[in-house]
Length: 387
Ligand SMILES: [Fe+2]
Image 1 (cartoon, rainbow, N blue to C red):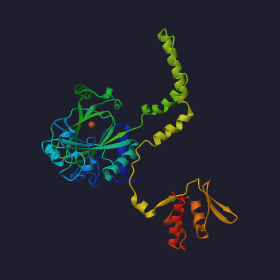
Image 2 (cartoon, rainbow, N blue to C red):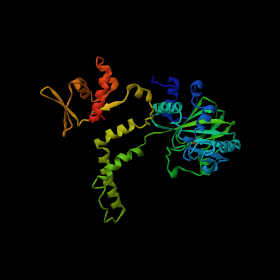
Image 3 (cartoon, rainbow, N blue to C red):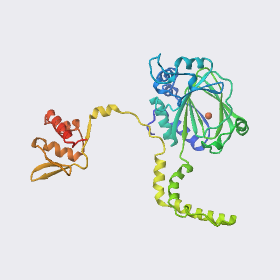
Image 4 (cartoon, helix red, strand yellow):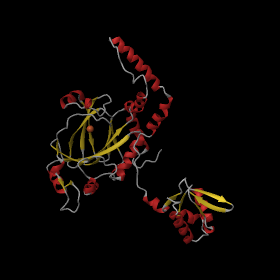
């Protein structure tokens, strides 16, 4: 199958099926692989990097109430950093009292987290975000709720019991109408269908809308919740909106409405215009591309290959090379310069290639001294032929 570092072929199949059928699933994975993603040691390491954390991505909760960022922040003056971020002593004091820690958006913090997210994107074709939860022992359930995206909870340390309820909310999205008070959620969730005990290496897939909550954990339970959002018809409306704006009928003034039947007639015209827009073939390719490019493009730095290739130069399209009676001339439209004999070969090659580097020239002209190639690059840069 595709190149996967964490998930085996059979695990990919199980998760794809669960994802397709929107069935929650408890998967026991190969812990060896996932143990490298997160544990107490890695958590200590990333928490000890003050520059990473701020009031947007570092949250603490005690007895179900959020602790204000100001309660545990420091300017780092005494500790040798100079940025307002969480104070390790204050944070650990709260944890001793039983507080939980939530780190949002950790995909770019750890390469392995990014790689798991990337594999989940390939399995599901959604956009993946990852939040980490660290909690001390707790016997109180948060109360049943659903998430507005699919969740793949990867359990990394300690143990935690999750309640899965029998009911589902139908395709909820992140909008105020889907924020229900606790009593309503308890009523809508129904009975507990299954209690799942998560241990390190376990993955729990919860489809969007599935009522659940986490019941109890042993001290120091860590899980990473990978949340996945998919393209929805409602997202496609942004493409249609532009077409609505340029439609003269939809911009026309509504007047002389006397009854609901007049409104009905207007509605029929709107349907006609929208039908035309939705059948407009020019919309199909942009929408197809939107789907094809829907998952995030997680980017890694690859400095090794850049160092290996050396500095790259480009010749702008506005600069031309011509041959006038056997003499090579470089011209930018305003000024022309003759090319010295010793640079002729190098110049012709560079203009044919458009993109060059010292390494490329050295490889292609092994019989020329490196000093001549350096001189050539220097002269071309000075004349602004290279950018
Ligand atoms: Fe949840």
